[in-house]
Image: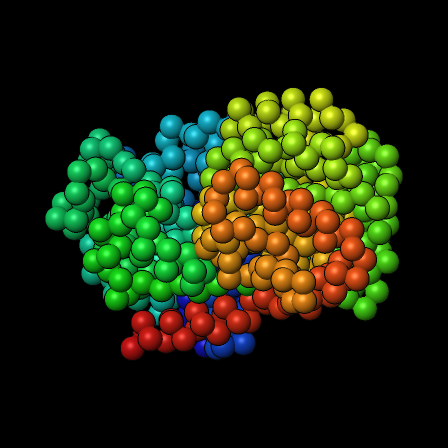
Length: 471
Ligand code: ADP
């Protein structure tokens, strides 16, 4: 067994803001089948219930420096020590991962994640862990490759980019907190601003993103990497895409402990009962034949809300109900709330982050709406397939890699190519009409539920990549 250190800002089920947590929770255990033993490293946030997860303090502790200031850390771990957590109350004692209760980013986020990355490097430097490959994720961990180089540590590094939109810009004052050796490595690379993602792209031995199609789009469409297009062109020989998997022990209607009525591809009757439960939860009339469309997401424009907001009123004449679960931009929240007030029997909006309710939506809805402008991989459309909740998606990134458009004979969902309101409207209407045709609906549900996106496929690809980096 070779050792992997999997470093991420979030890891399910301990801490989660989005899909990154699902990947950090799902990929490492699946690597075992391919002879890789991974240890997760993530911060011990105040919101993590140590008692519930039986986390305990280990004997490992240390000090790292940011500028002249020394910061202490302690390592906590779970029972089998597969997960290590960095404890430091000043940086991580608060509840939020990146933002406060109002959704505002913490002003010291750069410092918090500089500290976290320094701890990862310190653990390697002091041989508390000896990874063959350090697997970094997104900009919060993208400085690790150069930090390792600065202390002459030569573990191989892989940077997985889950989203190019967030890059970890930092100021010259924050730059001043790094060591002279680190600064010397940054200076020749940084263009006009300090950007953790750019530095990660430069110094990681390999970079991948989370679906083959998104990797291809990133190489073709300048705007989608938000200023990093030239940098990515310059590293394209070490750049690839590996489709995420999903954890079917958690996202599976056959075993789902969050839902009352279990079902599987052989017997989907439970889905009807979950649909009724969902309609009750939304204070709607229970209407078995009405198409229920679900949506669960961070409320940001990139997830396609401008298009949804544009067309929702046009759909109100149809036999349809929409349930939205999400938190994020206030303007989007207000709009969804406004719609829910105007059409209480057809639209429900729940503000907040609610894992059990997300499972009920997956289990009870008939269709799942995910019209993202771009989507590195996307997980909810894959969960939806397993729950027979037919996805309606924009043909982009991982959405295009995982959902096959229904052509009357084959397919697992509904997709549209041009990202505009009219195309979305037509596709939702087409999905509702197809749903109302029993024969097509049943065939689609069977096709969708039989799809397999287990982590083992991705783990096999990551194992091959680790192997190529080790040698
Ligand atoms: P992203 O990582 O861009 O947010 P993904 O589709 O890759 O998008 O992953 C989102 C994950 O976060 C899914 O597991 C989804 O169910 C979950 N999620 C997002 N918002 C909420 C919410 N409000 N309540 C519960 N789960 C949510």
